[in-house]
Length: 532
Image (cartoon, rainbow, N blue to C red):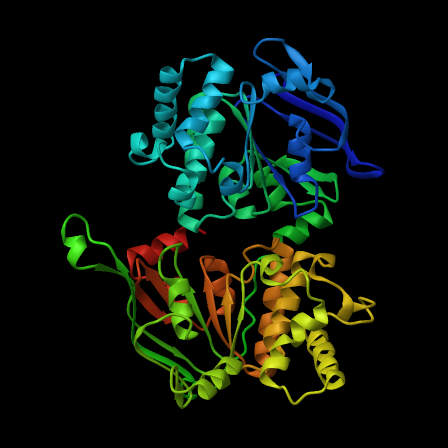
């Protein structure tokens, strides 16, 4: 290998007395793709921010020698802020994890890209605007001239990510740091963004450091991989070699953390407990032109879906963002107006307030992000016991507390393990532990059906495997039914008995999960399976 573009030696990052990155070493050559892999808290993002001088209130030491375009080789970790500011965007750029929070909501994406070009390359306002449109076009975004005038909230997730990439690459940097650039995207969009980064990397000859916890992305994208655990790089080398013959126990743990299918066999003759027939959801929209003054149109979010869920079964609903998955779930929960029929046992929504309340006790929801779905102002006892106060007002406080403790123990959270558990708050727990609390809240009222809305997408691979294992165990012990909403085909393969594939509000394929995912008939289903 020639002299590396970036050579990091003994890099340490500390916040006060707490050191979070412990003397790591790695190299990146020009034109190389290095993946920095690890779970949340391993130090991946702090390492990238430390290289750019963006880790606030951090003390960064060691050497990060980079061949820059103007000054030769420089130690990034020893540069003053004005010198680092000159390098950012010009020699080294970063794509942040969540474009909606990284992009300024008050300016169009074209203005934000043009600003970089004006500051870094001294272009005039008109020149920078034309260059911004060209940068958007190079990312494959449709109608770049129109999209350049759009604000971030007017773009889809994939379009926002492409705008972030255009901004980062506007000045043709030598090194791109991509921090989880596809985490919030659907599987097909992930593939598109990775292919785009690979193409642009080859066109520009730049180096890319991909920060991720998704091993499938690493296999598909990177030349070399460095595995981080608790601030240490525990293993690094060519991707194929490390994945085929891992030498460190943590690397082996990551590679073995794929969801496992360990489902019990429910009664095949059981009658469906939840049934929906010809379920249709539509929203009024204004029609273009003069017609809109006299008559509104309709946007159909779900077209005539039929759903059956028997006791002990899991129905996986798969599709990309905008396919109608969540709208279907809201209709089944009685939280969205619909046409057609939805029955749970002998009852249908809208029969009476008392019947609706009874049905709500029978069906509960576990949301995607436990941090935002759990109130930060409520204790764990209050959160888990909230449903009991509503549906079992006859319970006394002592009886309710006992039921809360039993339910938490059922999901693997005991007061022996966590002293003062009931009086703690959600921020005192990890992501996986918060998701267990969310599951306990849903289980406390003894429901028959759980609606699982992307229950593991915000979790690391090892924690994801633990949570899925917990859900499988609870289903076997309680005979629970699950409606699993996800875009992750691997999760469906591990969890679902039946699968329903949605695209643009329509059910394009449904049937036994292993059959549909093993031998997909519809082109859209094949695309989802092949994107894994």
